[in-house]
Image 1 (cartoon, rainbow, N blue to C red):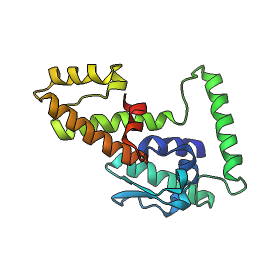
Image 2 (image 1 turned 180 degrees about the horizontal axis):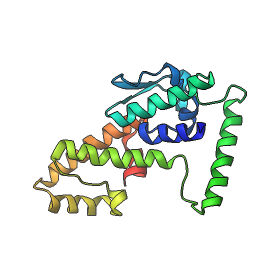
Image 3 (image 1 turned 30 degrees about the vertical axis):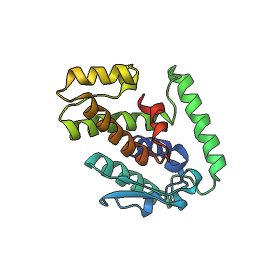
Image 4 (image 1 turned 135 degrees about the vertical axis):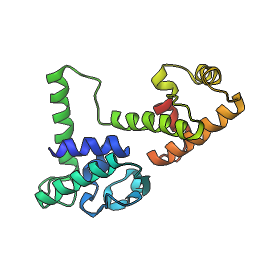
Length: 189
């Protein structure tokens, strides 16, 4: 059950695996406007970040993980008898067993961050333009082909498409905890 909560937190909040394990979930308020990941929550390179809590689903996921940890007497989703390294080894071993059992070699913890970035791109595009356009990676297009598709699918100029795409990538890059927007190409295409 603990890995379930970690995985769902990854998907809902774009957490890295180590963050979803180490987050001091009992200290996080589901009704807050942002989920604050600080040094104690094991972010990459110890760099804190803030993730907007935008919907009921995120609140529910955080609330359920929090209640689970509290019911176990834990602060995070790492059982107290494990170190981070031991828990990561256990989690990745369990994931490998699941992949082998179901024959689905594509699933991995980091995939939940991709899912988040894809869904966030579409949501931000919808907010900014009124159009529900998916990112290039989901559509299987290169950036030039995607821009041409967006140009034909919307009433926006190519300059507007480029600017909106840049704004969205900056926002997603920040939410993913990356210091460079070009890293989003790995997620979004």
